[in-house]
Image (cartoon, rainbow, N blue to C red; front, side, top):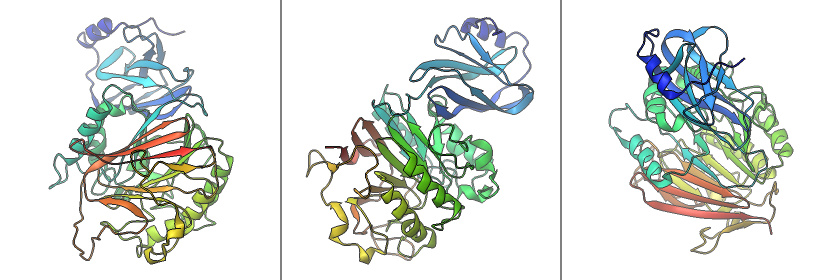
Length: 440
């Protein structure tokens, strides 16, 4: 039996009437969203029961989910929800909700549904608390919040280096859970591992801070094929298939476990769109050089042929602290001097108000019809200059239509057969935009 409904007034009174001394020190935050479920996580300063109260009416949270035991690290799976539906929730213990523990859940639509979907993308954002970068991450966040206004963010992607310098729990607290507190309590975040995050985590054993603080799909709970690991995974949201790869710590060889899984995962999807994301960019001439750095070279040589044969539309990365956006391209797997005009499926700007949108013939998994590659690694800092130095480039990769040393984040809007992308600076300027249209 479910407990009686808990009006918010009663919950507030309960907070002041002798409940165990306890406070939330992290969260709540949403994980592993599906059309009928979500995971709610939070951390408390003392062990207690884990209770999430849920309801369609914020004043009447008439369902409670309570796993057994007491803990400070609360992980509660909420099932039996309706797709594309808004719920309200409050976290707490057996006696009642806790202050600062309320949020909303908007379940994803049934897989394959064509409806407007907004995705927010940040890369190398985790600089909060780092000397010399004070306020930059928050400014990028605030610019996005002004831009999106009342519109709900459906998907939140983090492209790695989510917490500098070595991905400790304390660094994640400052750079992820504090900075994005209000977003995380209402939108599921789907991260990938960066090299700085890996300073406190290991993919092979799925151990360390990154794997402790995020709940990610290992058994295809949110769509796609089972990967068996939180290091790389896929999920579906509406008519989009998202693929997260681990470019830092997992085997990047063509016949290794990750890329073998990738082939099968892409072959199985029926979604209209495929968006891949990982940390190390296959093309960049920013604060890193894709010509010579082994991890970047291996992702280009080994992963890109599989992604393009599998129908990828958009590939998102960070690592270089810049914004770089390619033309619609295909089959470039060598160094930058091997890039030719023939590798441009469309050499225009991709803008409806310019040379026109990029067009792909197949609404679905079209093989080698071209993809756009984006480096969005400037959501927390810029560490490049226009002059050439030992570690910083000219931003002159020939695959790129546009390259900028500017702080910002990426906004993706998918609606049916149309994808619109925009690079939004920390001042709210839209310095790049393009559109992909699929199907005849």
